[in-house]
Length: 149
Image (cartoon, rainbow, N blue to C red):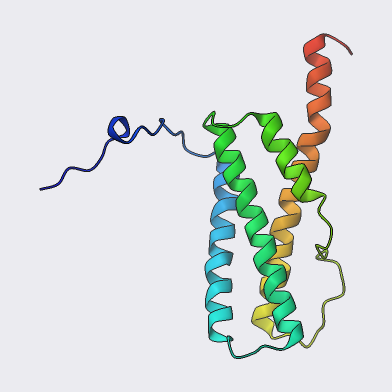
């Protein structure tokens, strides 16, 4: 009977569980990733420009959210400095080309694809607000640490 490797044997650091917010966002993103994969696998033959475009939009949004989740877990586990993660996410956040949830989306998209587009956009915008809030709070924390009011 083979023993399972322990953390000591693998050299992995002790990992703390993710905060409830990070866990919830990660679970929502994974659920959407699986749903998107299943939808796009079933619709593989549909290579229309509009479906292909929104396939890339949904995939991009979900990859971005998962990157944020992984950065948060790395910070929570002490594997990355908060500043490094914030700067990395700011660079991703400032990248151009991401359509907003409020952008006009053709009404003739299949209902399942339309749902994926809106829900992935809403999840991404939730993370965008969190990142923007973290960026605005960081200078306040720095001033408080210096004793300024």
